[in-house]
Image 1 (cartoon, one colour):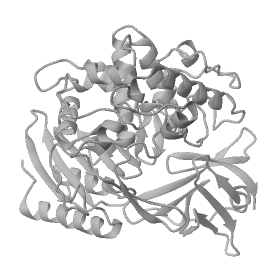
Image 2 (cartoon, helix red, strand yellow; image 1 turned 90 degrees about the horizontal axis):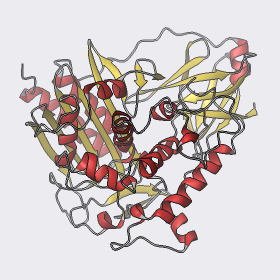
Image 3 (tube, helix red, strand yellow; image 1 turned 90 degrees about the vertical axis):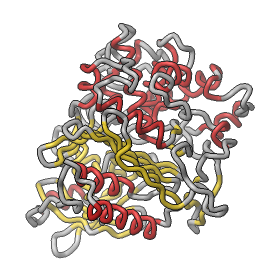
Image 4 (cartoon, helix red, strand yellow; image 1 turned 180 degrees about the horizontal axis):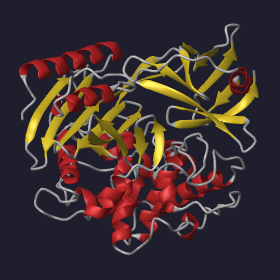
Length: 472
């Protein structure tokens, strides 16, 4: 049944207009495909360059940010299918710089694929700063993504930093804490052990070109110079002034498996159709076997109630149907890729502005395609009060190595007040050792992380585990 009625499309486009206004989004691209590659809906809102009023089209390049992780996971699964590795192998077998010296159990490849290596979030090691320190620069003749010396320096820095951690969020495989470094290690396994010489070459030859994704790449300068690449809009600095440029190196992680992909609506719709066809490209080329697709989508770690992480992909239920997806965020990038096997529909939402809730657009679009009401029904939680022990243990400051921080302070009425990155949040207790912050388009859960003696030493907020650094 076709649920793309004028009323439903009107509701979706009203939401897009609302989100664009609230977030000052300059341009948004939305597209739906079915398994055959037929375009069910495709529309472009705003501009790729708002100052020059240049429109978006199917070939406009956007940053994908963490949507890239599904490509990295797909590459690892291809290598396993080719007999080059097993996801159960210890990571140090493939990356000698990573010694795993401070963990009692080995970190295995599958742990990194679902963000459960045990690592707390760390500051980003970035492309431009590292290249400057090495005295090299990106060029069209010798791109950084193909330079072996740059890759070697990147893996040395990342592995050394991971090895320096002595306190962990848990044992390898125990719990999720989103980790860009882990996907950086995975992309270096591809570089070193696939036989293609670089992660970029592997993606191009084994995934992008076979799918006909001819406008996609993980480069930097080539996209900066592309006339049909989106201007990137982000707020930076203490005054939160708008930065508007085409600097695709801005805050880019030195190892490319976590967020370096750039792509287009046309290319990403082909990617979504491949998953709907269980590993087949539109022309019948087998990209990956069905079993590997199933393994990528299988729930392995809890992200928040009802949402789980597999291998480079998130899984959630929508009614009695399953939605597989991943989002991404970087300066000038808000992206979301999703598909539903039961309906045979894939949805892509791309934006050239940072911190735009494009996931809400994707959610509404998927609900429509699944025959559900466009409006999401939130989980209803029964109110409860923190116990005295919970409030005492949770109180304190929590700081992520990525720069985010929050404090929890006991109040006279027994509640906990929460201030996150300078903003007061309405935290409510819902279950023992767990609370929720109800935001406009989603719910963010806070869950205590306790040691074997029951003491709180960290808290998961959203997809990250924050170490507790001070007691209130």
